[in-house]
Amino acid sequence: MSSKYVREQFRAAWPVLVPTIPLYETLNVDPDHSQMPELWCTVEFYAPNEYAASIGQPSCRRESGTIELTLVVRSGTTDSAMNDAAEVIRDAFRYWSVPELRVTQIDPPVATKGFSDGMWYVAGVDIAYDYDRFI
Image 1 (cartoon, helix red, strand yellow):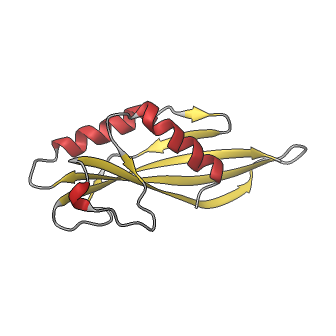
Image 2 (cartoon, one colour):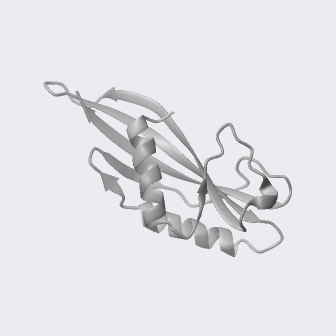
């Protein structure tokens, strides 16, 4: 799981940068799909590695990871709503950075990622990041 700082900064940025797409927390929670809007998103955080990026005092420890977004749209329509939502997210976060944290890559949507009960069209958008901690 990504560092607390990464998770907090991303969650704080979402309603400012992407106010039109609701973000739901679904880790360890299965939301009532009948109560969900036509379009929504959820997030998971992965930090596959951390390494020494510099030596000295202070030294930089770089965490490289992925913020995995799952976009969910009611099925039975074209993919335009999904693709439009993905572009909104990609445009919002493409150059996003806060102190010590920056986006390094943001991928186009990949269809059918994660869960689906047949009522939803599901796709993923991955945001790669670097988080530099100076210790």
